[in-house]
Length: 239
Image 1: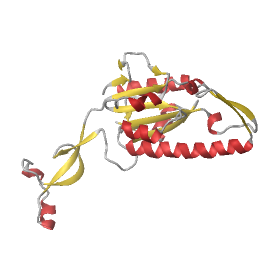
Image 2: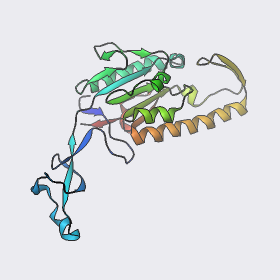
Image 3: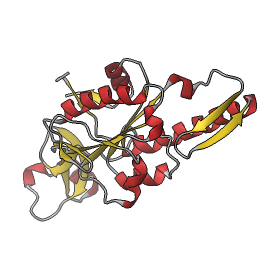
Image 4: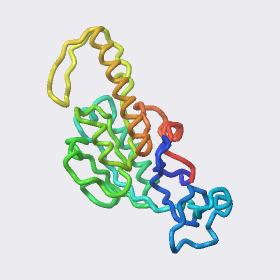
């Protein structure tokens, strides 16, 4: 596993987080920036000067240490369908990969071998200061809150959504459902199930697109192989 690390650069084309733009340092070209007093002459792009008559400095990507703050959703819905034990396996894998750069838990400090689950769920983040570094959020994403606002507040984040196969594709025609998050019971039929699936598809799309603009995202189904799923969806990358 040491060949992999947690991806912190946005999966979609926005500015990265693990890398920093530094004049003339690093290995990967980033952009041209207007020359500023103090820039080293050896990093001036003379071809750009020949084309435009203006001085530009070549900017490169330089690696910067990432600090990871883990938030583990311990809400009631996470305790169903085997999600919590599976999420624990995911969390321990990611924490071990993050330890060389700094692994912390929201509300409890540096990781020292024990996972810290937050029973109220991600809603507590709405009224708290943004965690330092990159937030790694493990959740089923089923809390009733403004997810787009929350993810935008976190800014630098990795979202790993964990759901059970029966939540993604209910296999029944009629049932009496119990919403453990709000304590309500609801009798449903085929029409309600179809409406649920349509709403869930839109919800997953919004989560995925927002998370990938800010960092990375993966949807894992309880029981599926963890590492291949995280690599395939861009949460893990080779060092």
